[in-house]
Image (spheres, rainbow, N blue to C red):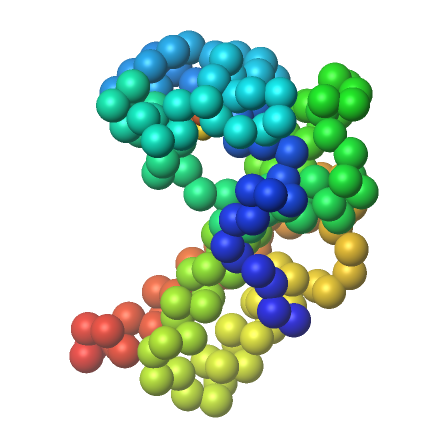
Length: 170
Ligand code: SF4
């Protein structure tokens, strides 16, 4: 099953501007608690300083990539609902985003590995890992909360480590 790993902010409830905490640093100009709406986010879900984020000290917003998890959490897991409609959803949406983003990150790594000259066993192995990460059923809060993230990440890492011969000639 093919999963869209590109963010579509038009289908997301601005989750990355709300659910995560920022620490004032070279990446963020302000401190912000998890669940607190960024003061730069307008009521329509647009960033008021979008074009100036780098200059104004919000470099972290430029480098962050949800890998397409934001729109899935908003549209699929929460059926288009938003923390704007119900503040109690903020933490729940954040928890779902945190897991699904890591799942999409693993899929991205496997996609990149697909550019290597994999043999049949390796292709089968990659497909098996992808089917764990993209089971083809609807994501819900429950199945995200119980997803075996650490174990699957270990399996992906072991698989990728085994591909070194393709890039190092070793
Ligand atoms: S600065 Fe803009 S992009 Fe960054 S979190 Fe705030 S609203 Fe979102």
